[in-house]
Amino acid sequence: MTTTPHPSLPSLHRTVLGWYQANARELPWREPDAGPWAVMVSEFMLQQTPVKRVLPVWHAWMERWPTPGALAAEAPGEAVRAWGRLGYPRRALRLHAAATAITEEHGGVVPSDHAALLALPGVGEYTAAAVASFAFRQRHAVLDTNVRRVFARLVEGQEYPPNATTAAERRTAAGLLPEQPETAAAWAVAVMELGALVCTARSPECGRCPVAAECAWRLAGSPPHEGPPRRGQSYAGTDRQVRGLLLAVLREAEGPVTQRQLDAVWGEPVQRARALDGLVADGLVEPVQPGVYRLPS
DNA sequence: AAGTCGTGGCA
DNA sequence: TTGCCAAGACT
Image (cartoon, rainbow, N blue to C red; front, side, top):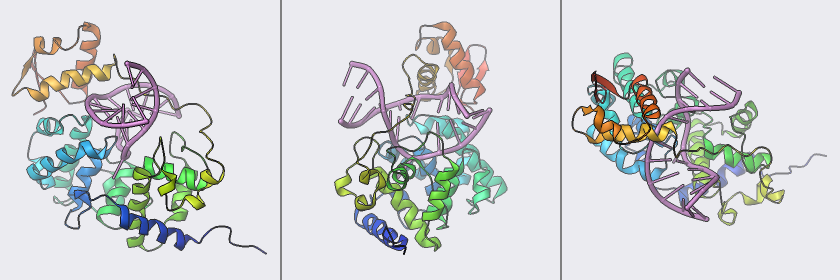
């Protein structure tokens, strides 16, 4: 005879959804009146950047550019400037490009179709699913780093998920997804929130976890991660640091900037030149004339 | 498909 | 202090 070794799927859903109702953060892009554009802007900003740092920039951005058309009407350099110190400024350029595509190809309306979202610049598998789920209440597996970690522990008994998203992870996520679209959308954000607030990377608070009793990792004694350590991201002395320093000069200047101003931020000329070339190649910086640069117009 | 791409907070 | 890591996308 087969018994049911685990609580039913609907029970798991109810548990996590109930936890979310009681514990979710109030975030402006989750408000009922936050439209798809508000959600999309938040998703771009939240790619690799913590909520706390995103909040002020998101507010300023939405006030200045309440629609994709408003952003598309301005120079991409203004988006880079308004991006401030969120990091990975190519995201600002891609968000501007996405706004332009929405304006030109979708009549200024953020598309609800997953494939159409995926075709936008800067929108990958995660962001397409997130916008379709959070803004349009569709049924999609939303696999971000939080969700992947929760499932790795809860289902696989592993402390951390693999480096890259695997087919097995997609199957797991799809298998746990509630049937009803509205419930699936609620589930997606709830699991993500659980990963962000309780089932965290470093010191998970299993005592506060609503599904601790069913967690495969916990039941296995919380074994530490096996396999190769995930490569840390070095920063000091890299091109990325130099690019950041150079772009900060451009952002904070009113208009064009001279070569001398840029030279002042980094002593080593070869790396400095390589970093500046990279910024130009990425479209983040625009040469005006020899020795003069500005944000893209 | 492994590397690249910012920035800052926190243990 | 130093290393880890935070709602990834792109090549």
